[in-house]
Each structure stands twice: as C-alpha cells, then as structure tokens.
Length: 579
Image (cartoon, rainbow, N blue to C red; front, side, top):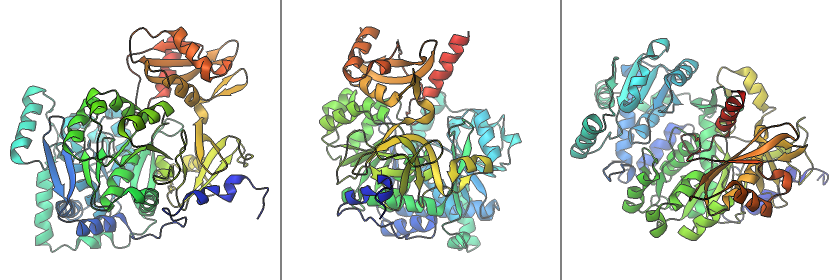
C-alpha cells in the first residue's frame, strides 16, 4: 500500500459502514426499471402505493396492483395505439399527483425514455427541452396546458395527453375539486389544441391490451443496464439546460446504494413517506419514488408545498415515518405553529439534499421532532446520490456523510491533480450511478466526465474518518483581497441568529478588495439591523468574511424545490449597478 497516497484514495469511509451497511457494491437485482416496478407491485399488490393529499384534506389513492394495471395500459397506449418505438422520448410535465407514477412507470414498461419537465416552465423553456429531447409525446397537467399552445407547432410532439391533479380520486371529491378549479379560482384554462384525456388514453390502452393480446414485458426485450431510461435536464455550471442521460443501470444502482445506507430504518411494506419535493426533480424521483416503491411504502404526494401550510393535512392525517426535503423546507416547517406544537410522532428519519443544510436548522429540527436530519449529497448527473450520513451510524454536523457503496470520490486541484489530505479540492466522483453524458452535447460531456470521473464543480474537504464537507460551489467562491470566502460558511453563521428566517450570500465587485461579501436576509421579526448582523458575524467569522453590506428582503428567489438562487441575486445586483 502506498502510504503517500491521499487519504481519500485509501477509502477511510469504508470503516464507517459498520454492520448495517455492506461495503461491497449491491448486486443488481433487475435488468431494467420495469422489472423493479413489477416486482414491487407483485409483492405489495393489495397495499396503498400513492395517496395524493390536497390542502383541504381531500385525497385519492391507488394500490400497488392498480398502479401496475394502469401503467400497463399506458405502456400499451404508447406502443400499440400511438405506435411509438422502443427508445422514443416521452415528456411528463405534472406536479406531484397519482397520475405521475402511472405514466412514468408506463413509459418505463413501454421501453421508452422519460423526459421529466417542470410544470412551471415558461413556454420558451418548454420549447427548448421538448425540441432538444426530441419528445414525441407529452403528458401535461391541465392547469398549465395553455402554455403549450404557442410552442407545440415547433416541437416533434405528435400526441398530447392531459391529466388532472385529482386524477384517480373518487367521483365526488374529484368533481368538487374540478368545480373549485373551474369556477372559484378559475385556474383551469381552455386547451386550444388537439389532445386526449388520461382517462381515455388508459381506456384505449386497456382495450388494446385485451384485443391484441399484448405481452407488455416484451416491450422491454433487449433493454439492459446501458439502455437509456431518462433524460433529466439540468442547468449545470453554464446555465444552458442539458439533458443528463441516465440509464436503467444508473438509476437501479442508485436505488440500491441509497437503500443500503438507510435500510436499518426501513421496514418493507410499512413505511409512509411524505413527498413534498417535486417528483420531476431527480432527488425525489430516485429517493421518494423509486426507492420507496421498491420498499412497498405508502407515498403521500403533495402537489405543492407552498405555502408551507399545504403540508399540514398530510402530517395530521397520515403516520409519516420518512420525509425528504431541502434546508428551506425544514426551516419553514419549524416556523409553523401547528408543526412545532404537534411534531410528527411516527417520524423515523428525515433526509436533506439539494442544498446545504444549515447547522442551526439541523439542531432545531432535532429539538422539535426528536429525530435527526441525515444530510446527503448528489447531482442530477449522478442519479443523484453520491454520499450520505449513515442513518444508524455516526452523523457528523455540517457533513454530507460518506460515499455510498461502490462509489469512489477524490478531491483535485484545477489541473486535476489530487490535493493533499485535509485540503479543499474539487470533488470528483466515479461509480455505477454516473450518467452516460449529456444528450447531444459531446463537448459539454467531455468537460464534465473525464476518464470515467464526474467533475462536480463543488469544493470539499474530507476528515480522517472519510466524512466529506462541501465548502461551496467553485463558481460561488468569493475572493476578498486574495482570501477565499465560501458563502455557505457565512450563511451558516448568519442563520444562527434567532431573528433570521433565511439568508443568502454572494460576492460583488469591490474597488479595494476585488470582491466583497454581500448578504441578503429575510428577518424573522421586525427591528433587525445591518449592524446587528455584522456584530453577530464577528463572533463566528474572521474580518474579511464578514458581510460588507446586508440587504433585508421579504423573500429570496428559489428553485421549485426550495433551493435559494444565488445566481438570480447576482444578476439582479449586476443589473442595478449597471443602471
């Protein structure tokens, strides 16, 4: 053994797996995702798989057997009725509702490729993604279908299937919800183009299934771990939306890897997971949808977690055992009186990802709920999980945990050379969950995946036990008089103030120091001042890290999953100063 090698090459994290985590990469159980769906549906046929929970308490549920039957019908609709070929791209643009797993699993069973699309996208964003992916069919929620009219003609989409948030509800609550949408809040637009309702598509598929005696599993003949399963679009470091090519093998491996890290707290067939993060986002797609379906869990789907009070009925009406979220979601929940007064009594674990978990939020969560938030780390390009704090093992504050089994991690400098142990470097990843590349973008792929290693653009450090800590994004680092300042560190310090609800930190040009630290703060209460924030920071930060300016806001720009958008704050600052 070469003892001069950097510590991460010696994989000290393997010693942290303990008895609950197998250090060897999981042996693949399935050839493709359709096999995973069928296996779970057979084992848990009579159990409830999905419940869509509306803010008013109305709900609709599907059993595992119903999901299996409906997704079979949708697969037949795609292949036999529409005539799509294996590998054809099918876009899905819906919020969290029971229609989503039915059509997503149907696409998998058809041997087609799922293109997850944010339902809040603008027409221009929709056009780019549909044209780039070459999607031939689209499933879109009726609430936003009007946006499609102006761009549909410029895409390759030849069939549009329209679904409802209240799909699969019983007739009375479904009619009530539709009436409210149509007449009360007038949120149902007219749809001025040819389309078919999901009910009818499933009916056509079911008829064709019987009439043509279709062998649905035959649709996936020839698929293997290298076959493309999904195009998951990401802005990446350039801001240009790119489709990460995720294979069946990528996603199956990541399901097994995530399950390996959390199985000590998962009782198959008994868990109830709250899904507030959108299923079209890779975190919820792999973790909430695929992992917990494979485990026979009941998935409580919340179409929109905003305002945060929309989650109240879900927590009150169902024995939630698992919840996934981002820092802002956990923070917002604890500022709700109903949650703080009556925290979920069945909760076993909470998992954070998508953005840095602030130490103050993690501490407060444990006090309020009696459970810890296990922070993990991942990227769209890695399906997404790279590392995780072991649920049953040592969890270190401010850490993204240890690499999941079968994953190699290194820290390198700008030239790609390993940095000395204990020093920050760009985190690069190698493992079965790493994407094939970006769809139709070989140059972008070459920049991001080199010799099998995924270059994440995140700067990290590793301790002697193999636990990693993300310092920040390389592009977000602030250079103050030659010193590196990482926004995460400053944000974490400011978040410790009781008077602060949310905070974001960026670097702005400065004539004396090159760049200066600027903080944007959403106060918890009136009366908070810039001087108070700066005085507080002096307790935790050296002088050059203390914000030079502090601006107070009522809210901060966020992604649909609640990740604060520093890039939007930077763009706004540039625009203001230019003016």
